[in-house]
Amino acid sequence: MDVQKIVLSTGREVVLDEHAIRVLNKYVRTQMTLEELAKELGLAGWEEAYELVLKMPSYVMWIPYVMQKHLA
Image 1 (cartoon, rainbow, N blue to C red):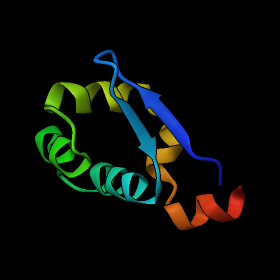
Image 2: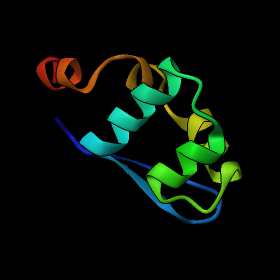
Image 3: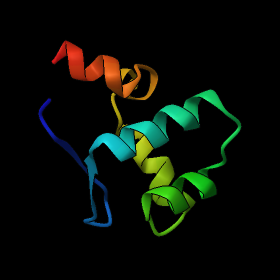
């Protein structure tokens, strides 16, 4: 599976590796807040987490990592 990167307006690059995808899967399926998402991904705050969610392709958040790996 190719590694994708999302560049935020702050200049920070978020690498969509296995850990990041699993955290994003958890985010969309639970009541995790943007603050918790930012903390788990090492972002500066909820603003960066919000921007990441806006720029993220929705299939990445909803399809589990294991299935994405087999589809690639």
